[in-house]
Length: 347
Ligand code: F6P
Image (cartoon, rainbow, N blue to C red; front, side, top):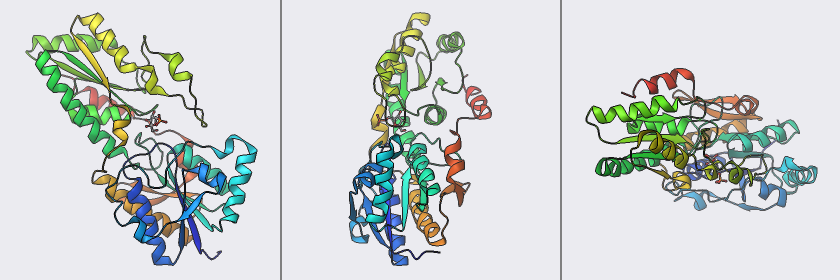
């Protein structure tokens, strides 16, 4: 096994609370093994440009409670063109990197997987508020995002209660409904709409009307940004596509479209709110400090052990190595059993 002297660490894709605790842990564990660490700036963009700066324990002492990422991030995809890919691989040698720790979601981990196959020793760390990376129960950023969304739901309930209204909360999550599911279940929403399962709009509206006859004069609905209903602005979201082919789902305005449908079908005053990037900001909650710390430490342990093309994953209470191929092979979506459980709460 090649001797490791210097490693690079980067964060790619959407920012979220928990990235800094992971960076901190990577840097701290690297000190244990005598590795120098270079912080690659703004995700894969930094590797393509060769933009990296030394980062040491003194630089990370106070970042555990800070949201976002001190390294910066981007949605750059070096595999979008041959030239960028070549530069990225060349810069690994130019920067003297013996291994890379890439913290990110399926896009970032997908690049790490491809680079590993081309001989660049990479270890991934699963991060995304969408929580949709396969092979891990948890992704960095998810718990804080849901905590923020639950807080938003509770605030909306106050208005709903006061005005005898229905309030619709739109949350992020791309094609996976984890944020909506857990926000709705833990926040006591009256209905949840997920991209994985079609909503019977008549059934939902009947339920919201029935609540009134039971004396509950308001209601809340949580909707995930990718849910398909009539009245969304599909042209707006399709106008901007990132380097990995993702459109901006938030521009569809699904929350507002759902509110219009409810108002039209029930006659009840309905409003919507989309909390967007608010879910990705702020200080990390417990699990977005504790687990990223364990994942960051484990990632450098895996570098030392030569376990490349892999990531540490949260499996139950344990951290276990999982192949990046498994992580990026398939989006982890909400299973039908959990959806049935959530639906059973709509009473
Ligand atoms: O993947 C994380 C995520 O927050 C998605 O839930 C959302 O659709 C997307 O990023 C938004 O991306 P951006 O910050 O580029 O607008």
